Length: 121
Image (tube, rainbow, N blue to C red; front, side, top):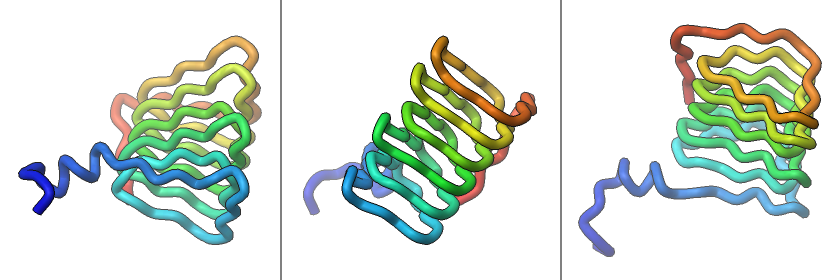
């Protein structure tokens, strides 16, 4: 109706924002990408990308194609690509194909590098 892009193309470009004052108590699952400025108390399963900002906090496991952490994550990560940025903090185990950890990032747990990682939503 508003263009001729397919639904799958629109999902790949959509971004859901969890605002800084928002708290979600429960699991979150989406095919789109998300940016978390607030708090999620539950597991996060995303087909696209998860961006956890400096003010964001996830207490639960994250399963996504791409994960970028600037804030705090208390849980395990399963992803194809994980970028732990300076000031970011993860307490949990990581299963990932590609891993980038910047100077100034904090991590407590075990890392398992995979030739390929299957993520599920």
